Length: 73
Image (cartoon, rainbow, N blue to C red):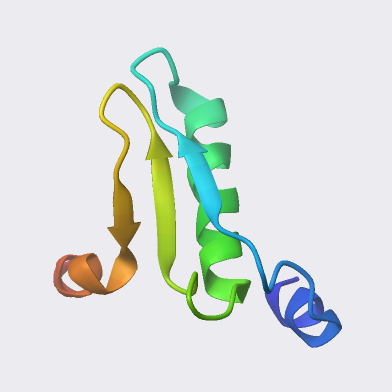
């Protein structure tokens, strides 16, 4: 799916906004994060690798900041 959307140029100029409010849990939270990760992977600069959290304290997150944490798993 990612390769297909990438070849079509879909979502290349998008910035993901992921709802991670406390009321989000289970499947809705997982889907919000998954779609956000899909978009940040397909987007091009300046948005590539970035997303905004929709929460009480919104943040612009760069995946590069967390790459080492993922590699520990």
